[in-house]
Each structure stands twice: as C-alpha cells, then as structure tokens.
Image 1 (cartoon, helix red, strand yellow):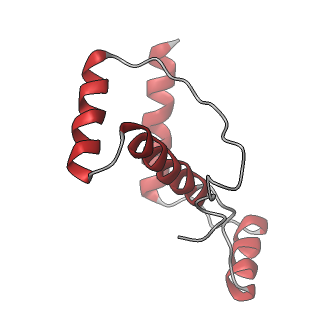
Image 2: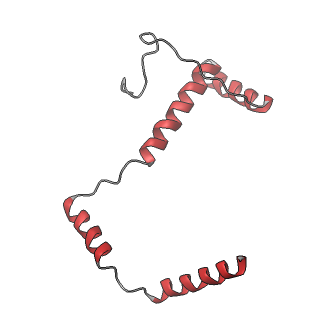
Image 3: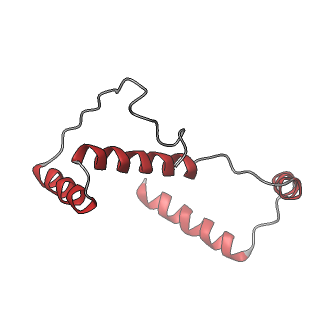
Length: 101
C-alpha cells in the first residue's frame, strides 16, 4: 500500500477517534482482530481506512475518453424517444406517486 493510502503512524502525531459500540460489536472486533493477529485498534483503523478508500473510489468522477464523452453529450442534447418499456415504467411510477398522495 502506498504512503498516501496508509500514513506512517510513527512520523505524524496521532489523532484520536472515539466511537460508541455495542458489547456485541466489541466482541466481534476483538475476535476478528485476534484471528488476524492484530490489536483491536489496528484492526478497526485498518478496516475503517479500507472502507473509506473504497467509498472514495466508488464516488470518483467518471472518466470517459473523448469518443465516450461525445456520445454522452450527443445523447444529452438529442435524447432518443422513449421506448415502450420506458413509457410503461413512467406510467407505473405515476400510478405509484398518485396512490401515495
């Protein structure tokens, strides 16, 4: 893992993060940490970091090449006419919305 992805804890002043968890969650984290041969703190920090990196990766801006960008722009400027499946879905949605009001 790169330095940017996993900061070297020995070079920077550690920050504190606290969380309230249930006793069941604590036992779960302790068991998982034990199975990995790490401390609960290291297990939780590493797991949270992985989840954060994954969330950021999932929400990155979609990068398209020039041809794909042109296709998207063309479709936005000149959308195709709705097909039967789309019209049916829109009608179902309208019924659903009308029923909830």
